[in-house]
Image (cartoon, rainbow, N blue to C red; front, side):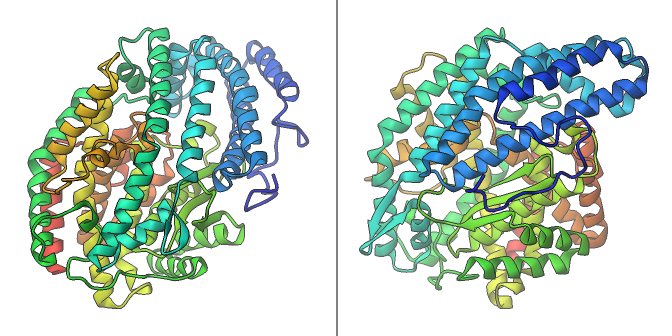
Length: 576
């Protein structure tokens, strides 16, 4: 695909089952492979033959996964390309709907196979559990609904990626406008903030219409699968075997009791340092001592080179993995018009290699994003030796430990970007960001709990629910005069639109990452070894065991939150 930043990546291992030359966007070429797998299942007479059948399924799944990922990458890198959009939608509309019933049939054949009970229990425990879940949830009638959901999500990406404003006589993306919120000139910050807020508000009805169409689809998907609401369905579909909606509500409460007091202290100190009567939305990102914004780099390649040196300090293996990504052009990092917002790491499943996408504009948060997505990439590389396709990826709750812990571990070497004084300032900003993240996580997650347990709610009721959560978790920020922007502030959070219920994972994982960081204070080398040991397990063990391997507890009660917040506060005090 010509629009990809990389090309012709070799498979990690030679294909054994999937033909070398095959058009993975043409269902007539793919279907015979499923036919062969269907026919082979009853012919597996030994455990070894059954295991090879499982591996051949995985080879096909990985090849198709990579095809879909490549089309998604091209589309998000070039949202203004009709070619990329058409290729992505063709796969979503013509290939993915055909895959689901065939994969469902293979899952049923596996569960019914007489030799399944002879497979090594420890090795196949998670595989068994996840396959059983897939069969339990599959509904033929949901396939077209899920296709439509993917198309609506793509429309959200396209709308978000198209928004620009004119500032200083130049057209700017909303991502590019973020740098002006760090400027000491308060009037300039306010002007930039207002422009972006007004631009989003101009599209508020489009965002609401898009979300309501998604909401209708999701509620129908849940009903079709026999669930009372989409929340119940989503928790099951996401394989949340180790925690419940009630645990999430308790997490929100822990954020309220353990973290919100610290948030308000930080906000009060920020207001005092800025010398303002009230803290406004455009005061959140600026340095409170009115120092110029941290500018860690000017060109993207400079950021890449300095990040490489951070990993050189940390670990030779990690450094080598990042160098490989650079050599293979598995990075698309600069912001530009027509590029989807945000950042992500995508796994190219057949090559078993990671790709990093982000929108860097020269801010400290770009360094944090780079370290974050590199953590995901290291997870992909750590698990690449796993032959079971489904085990090469872990549950999101642990995937985000990989990324968030790398932010904290990498921050130890920020002198590659800054002087010691500026590096300490960046570390302080990062730790304050972690504290401030938890209330936003709780807001986004609690909002989704409300949305999907109140079917039939009106737009006005949804707005009121959001405002109530902003009151609960927003702290002491004065939004007066901008109530409309506050009421629609959730439109900027893509997870609410395209990844429903995918946000609390960040909070759970942040607690894991803070534990890795706390461990590194006691024994840096051991903490890094444990971290890498956890990553190397991929998704082969249940969540609590993955956390344990990385030296963490899988728990997000107030008892876990409290000492970690205390450690962050003590480090903030040291950093001044």
